Image (tube, rainbow, N blue to C red; front, side, top):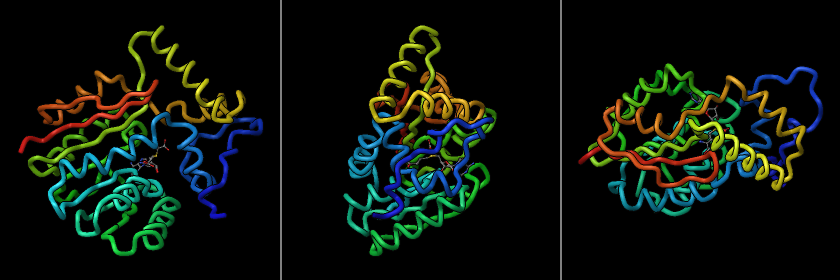
Amino acid sequence: MSDASYRDAIFSTPLDRVARFSFDEKVVACFPDMIRRSVPGYGQILGMLSLIAQRHLRHGAHVYDLGCSLGASGLALAGALAPDAFRYTGVDLSPAMTSKARQTFADECPAYAMQVEEADIRTLEYAPSGMIILNFTLQFLPAADRDALLTRLYAALEPGGVLILSEKTVDADERDNAWRVERYHDFKRANGYSDLEISQKRTALENVLVPDTLDALHGRLKQAGFPRSMTWFQYLNFASLIAFKEG
Ligand code: GEK
């Protein structure tokens, strides 16, 4: 059994003071299990990436995957597209994530042009790209840094390029928000998390993951320069948006 299949039990024992969540070795070891059981629709979003790429990506164009973690989006693209269809660069701040992602690409898709960089996506110099994927990453940046990053990504996209932005969201209406959060906790319970794990993870993510409303996300894309964006996927308090740079 590869260590990628370890079950997430990070918040299963009572912790005196719940530590702030971080993307360290412990998280990397169980990350695929954690994200699959914690993010409603994660698999469906990955599955659609290659279909979106087939429609929007020029042959051989460059793709960024920002906050790539273990490179799941890159693997999804390589699983569906030919080796010469695209060039991929995954970027992540966590050395534990980038070294594992590099190894995975070398093992799983050696014929593909897959690069992984350890860098802060806020300060990276971006090369022109046909598609930029931000799957569940913008939410971890300080709110004050989000607009500036999206503006730089708009500039890096080639005409006709697309940005995929997937995020945990919050509802402006308190009652709607409470309903979504409660059903989300039901979803996690049904996926085998205990009440203790759910509440400890929630505490650990406080002030680390600060979600926007869907309206705020569309507003951020507009201020960045995107003339058009739409929510193409929503499942409870998780959503994926696509933004188009006109060609
Ligand atoms: C997936 N997209 O599997 N610069 C670079 N990376 C960062 C930064 C930053 N400033 N801040 C956070 N990260 C992935 C899932 S996980 C989402 C993305 C989650 C990285 C961080 O190290 C982590 O790997 C990733 O963003 C967020 O489709 O765990 O909920």
